[in-house]
Length: 280
Image 1 (tube, helix red, strand yellow):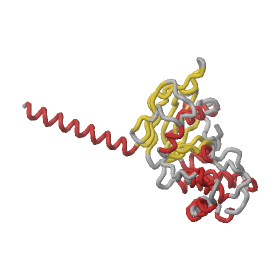
Image 2 (tube, rainbow, N blue to C red):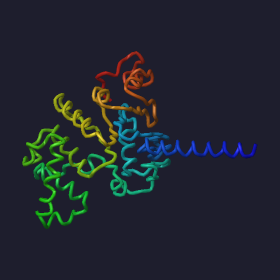
Image 3 (tube, rainbow, N blue to C red):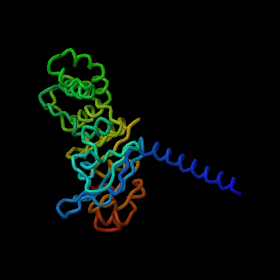
Image 4 (tube, rainbow, N blue to C red):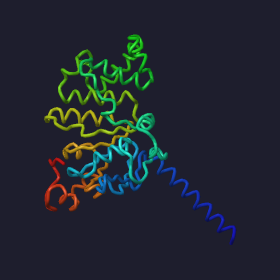
């Protein structure tokens, strides 16, 4: 009897260990009770988020839902009032933004093309030299950056900007500037890309181009994005988390979320409305 009980306990421990390994392998980012308060106002309230490795995960919600605050917490531009942030099974809640970036959590604007009067190629090379830790050499040696040309051109090919390599960044259309921003983000070799409203302010043609680009570069990577355009969300998102007043209102695929009466009420003011074509 004792031997059977011991064998049963061993099987249970092995099962728990296996399940834990599966969860760690499948989940790249998790928040547990993530909360942020501002002088009595709770912007993010007990958010439990789990981002699956290799997926495109969208964070949506009406204005003031807490989406941007949540992004700022994940990258530690804001300190959480309570809760945990776990990346690849490691608690990173107490780490600084630079430490989190070195782990491979890169937010698009962190290393975007902030040099409008440099060429597209030069901007991507700057991103590459930052990832290699050659920031100070850059200002002294053109040779150091020239060594990165092949990799820079590869990145420009990925985002469809090869023909614009020698174009001054300020001359690019808005959509192509966002493509350049994605290229500079990729230059940091992110494991998890955080994209903050990647299609905001774009016309239909640029929206389609950037949406296709996000889908393309998601191969072998994980993307967490805040996005307002529901057509974009419907087209490329694997999982959607809906926030309202700082709390998780719903989560699931677009098919599931778009039929949720609470989500319809939050977005459209009626449970009988439709999300298609809506903007948060």
